[in-house]
Image (cartoon, rainbow, N blue to C red; front, side):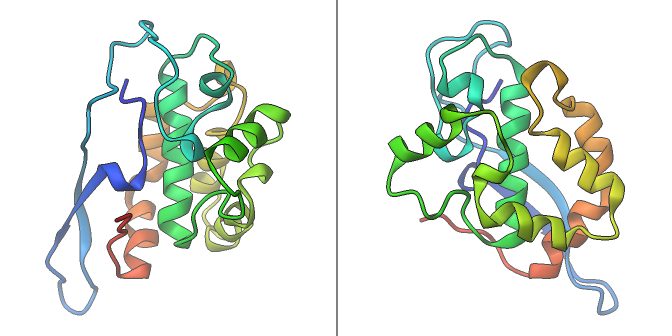
Length: 167
């Protein structure tokens, strides 16, 4: 488990543009493995609050679905160029919003509705993204998410023609 998936911890490698089609995502590598551990060996509540799943915020047992939640939030941020819960004043407010009531993804703010509009016409991808925010035991698996993302992810990210920076 990575336990701190977010755009700032991802390196995206683009292939050169081909015949005016623009660059394509060639690979994505997660960095900053400081919080990484084996699944099932939860040690505390690490991560960045805006990307943390409810089970992490509540300090409940968690597993790989916590990383799937964070991947879903990260994808929405990359697609929309909007930070999740941008209107929150600080990390404590983010945690309070996640912990208050299990009503994701609306609690992520406008980024959810922007993602929905962006992914109109991509029902498989939209369904996989929506399933990132179900309760832990019902959440989409990482392998199923990867299959659903396929080439559509590259198309959505490439449509913005930018590299996300969080510095």
